[in-house]
Length: 116
Ligand code: 5GP
Image (tube, rainbow, N blue to C red; front, side, top):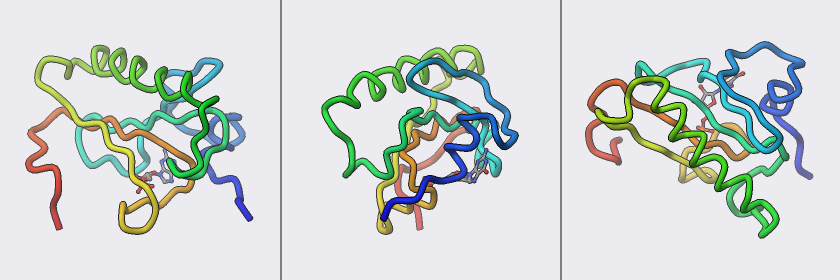
């Protein structure tokens, strides 16, 4: 059975987070354990545990995640230097929170895409 995560509570503003953007489809907030000077999570407001659970009706939210990432990168001042967008899925993908989220990380050279 799927159980909603802390991210639903952040989206609903039931627990505190540094929310940098929110609209009808997505919410973006700073990662509690940043791995780079800019580390922001962009999540669909609808509870979707993993990419495996995505449906066609989620395409608008997924598209919005990219345009919001573009805008936040611009406001963080990292558009030109560059950044990485990451979506982890399940155990081998390193997913820890089972509510789809896109990591936006940047502000320093990130090195190779796969480490460890
Ligand atoms: P995942 O490994 O699932 O792709 O990444 C989950 C991310 O969520 C991690 O980078 C972790 O630091 C972040 N995270 C976990 N719990 C919280 C929380 O309560 N608040 C915030 N802002 N970030 C969280």
